[in-house]
Amino acid sequence: MRPLDFQRITVRPDQMGGAPCIRGLRIPVATVVGMVADGMTTEEILAAFPDLEPNDIRDALRYAAEAVRERELPLLTSP
View (cartoon, rainbow, N blue to C red):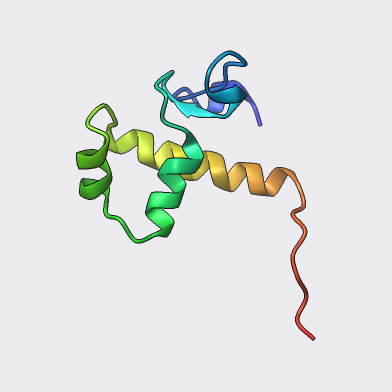
């Protein structure tokens, strides 16, 4: 994953434990992705975090998708 691909995503060791965040804000990518997964609309997320912009949500989802492509996650197998 090249940092230039995600200009809205920042990773700072001294902020939020180094978790990827949106544009240097203290809003982790994982929080935004979780809100989408919980069924929240873009409008609801923007209302909850007025500093966010619609493109922030899209970039958070793109970043999460790329992060999953970059590593294997252990999954339970069905019997």
